[in-house]
Length: 266
Image 1 (cartoon, rainbow, N blue to C red):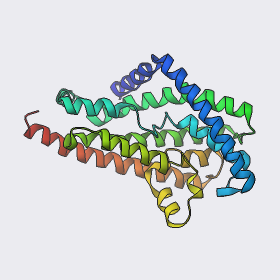
Image 2 (cartoon, rainbow, N blue to C red):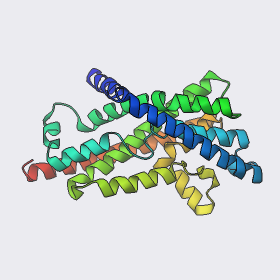
Image 3 (cartoon, rainbow, N blue to C red):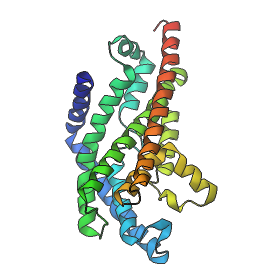
Image 4 (tube, helix red, strand yellow):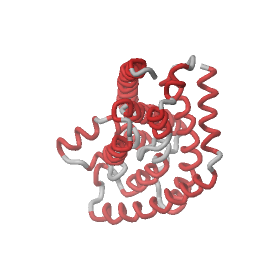
């Protein structure tokens, strides 16, 4: 575990070196936060309590989306581009020879990235949003802790999804198309465009049951106090269930891909 802790710390430090990119990301998240917030205000003034949120909760949802966009990699970004490139060039064979677990290695590095993105690109936009708008911020420290646990589970689900996408390069060789599809699915089904509670009928039920809802919709509802008591346990179980299922799927696919590398001679 100490090795993976070091890898996670390395992932944090690696992204901390990109100060200009981080500042640009904070600016972009803040600008888009204001644009989407005013759009939501116009929508909620016409339809109060839309999706079960009042105006303050809806605005909070907007800024949570901006705070978690990079941390939970809803638009992708992070390890998958590097991993796809290593598969394309054959450098992944070197990774497979290392005396470490490939999946846990990339997971540890990605959790370090997520931690930095939450602090580096999440805190400032959220703070500016709280200064400009009346947000529904939790008054209890317990809710903040529950929210961080949910965000961590969401980051693991995000990694597991992108790990599967990256592994597709063993067969496709170019993972650009798969990453584009993953980005679109992440934006739509995470609730980044609109809260999933607004989706009607079967579409809403399917969207809320998909793993991408773990990236924003579930953490946002935990932050807003929509999940408490056994409801919070069920929310955690939903996220953890998807994390375990997707990580197992990734491990199975990794095993098949590894045999493919051996057959091809590395």
